[in-house]
Image (cartoon, rainbow, N blue to C red; front, side, top):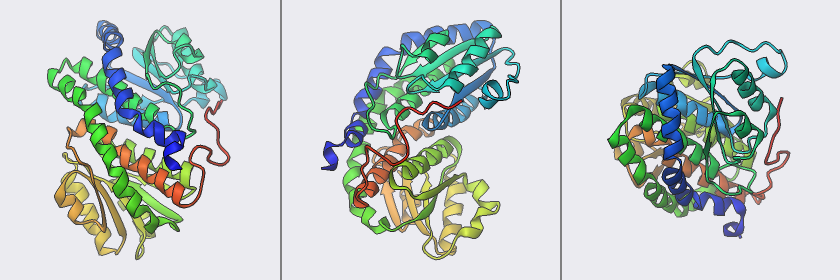
Amino acid sequence: MLEDTYLYKEIHEQPQVLKSVIENEKPKIASLVSEINSRGIDTVIIAARGTSDNAGRYAQYLLGAINGLLVALATPSLFTIYKKPPRFGNSLVVGISQSGKSPDIVAVLEEASRQDVLTAAITNETESELAGTADFVIDLHAGIERSVAATKTYTSELMAIAQLSAALAESAQMEADIQRVPEVIQQTLLMDKTIEGIVQRYRYMRECVVIGRGYNYATAFEMALKLKELTYTIVEPYSSADFMHGPLAVLEHGFPVIVIAPSGVMKPELKRFIETLDLRKAEVIVISDNQEMLADAQVPLELPVQVPEWLSPIPAILPGQLFAMRLAAVRNYDPDKPRAIQKVTETK
């Protein structure tokens, strides 16, 4: 039964995992923030791969919009293959990795340490090589993640980044909003039955695109990755703006487009985008808490609880995780053992 798989169990563990991150990591994050402020740091470099790279995309928007920090993703091959590391200057270098084992991510932090730059690791393995290299370590508190497809470690990475942003902003309102997230996730998991009822429609889907913008640009990438990993579908993630610059040409009658559109400042832009999709007869699946957005979808997936836009990527990825899991089951694929990949990928 699907309910007996590691993937199903780990998706449903997320409320407790997030609660553990919130309850336990605040002191360490406060210490990191104190060091950031004392050094006058205004730039963050993030080293990550795969799912953790998508958490880095969230950090680019959140730490930029809320905290005014310039956030860039590192290029690990400059450190490991070209042997030409850039100068970090007065920055914070963050390695994000559930395992803490990927040599290229470790190499970025090792070089940062050689340059006497502040470093931090966000990881589920606090005894890993990555953690041992960092000045500060934020624990994901996810326990052992046995499923190859990362779920609970992804949302806990997002939570760690959200807590860092709230602490930097010294915002009581942000802190209060964070406290609500575990219950929001518990409510969002109730979407599983709805999703189970619609995935049969996509049993023979071979290609699709996932659209997100702003904070949920990261969500588009992560949902696309889960669909690739678990269902072997050809899935491309885009921002709605980038999709209009050429990829729009792939649309034809019935082409599936998944739009992640929770409430927020992106609503008018995404509303116009969905209208364009409808004019081109695409099959539009909308993930949103907003009835106006859902009304334009062939397949509406309603998020049950509205949260501030900056926090929305945490609940918004759950329908993506559930959709990928249920579609894999419909296709009779083992969700715990996707072909050709393994849990820990050590790239150089």
